[in-house]
Image 1 (spheres, one colour):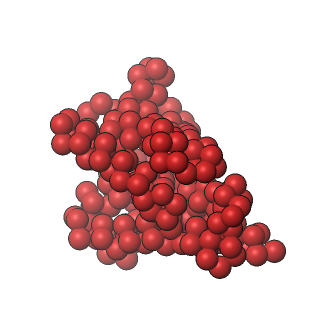
Image 2 (cartoon, one colour; image 1 turned 45 degrees about the vertical axis):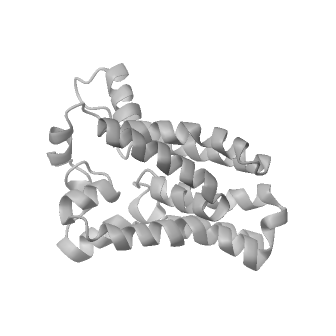
Image 3 (spheres, rainbow, N blue to C red; image 1 turned 60 degrees about the horizontal axis):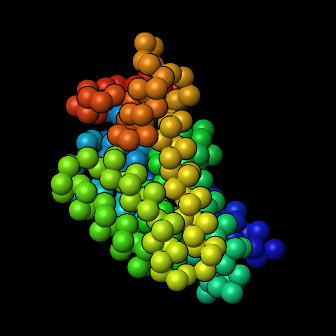
Length: 224
């Protein structure tokens, strides 16, 4: 029964739309209706500036990402059952990406995923951040380097000497982020957009258009 409650908690805490709540409280707007339409940190930053990213990051990393693992390890004692433990962070990321509170229109799960790595394998998190920051400094293309950093996670997990469950967890986490990039929050395809080009933009750039300025400034039509 403790395990069931952990899994329920993991999904529900992951499903808290933190950036959406902050945008509502601070600006009184629905993040799904402005900018990129994404309910994540980048869209919140474009709306409110950098200061509100601090409480967003703290909640996403420590509450959404890390707390299900810490509860599983130190309250329930799942550190000797890594396979059962890894289900909790996957449910937290699933909640973030497909939150029941916003009709399953969520973010990408990267920040929550970083929180899970902080609790599970700080060395793997360090490798992720090193690759991502280095790549961003070279190209200023965050979408591409987040993808590359995610793709390398199973390798870092294997090299870290952690349990095999950590390797498959990082692979599953990467798959969930990529799936959300490809599907986004709107399953309809933009009119006139070639499917191959659209999917490549979503996968590599994390947006439908190669024009970043136009994408950030657009006003998507989304229902409440």
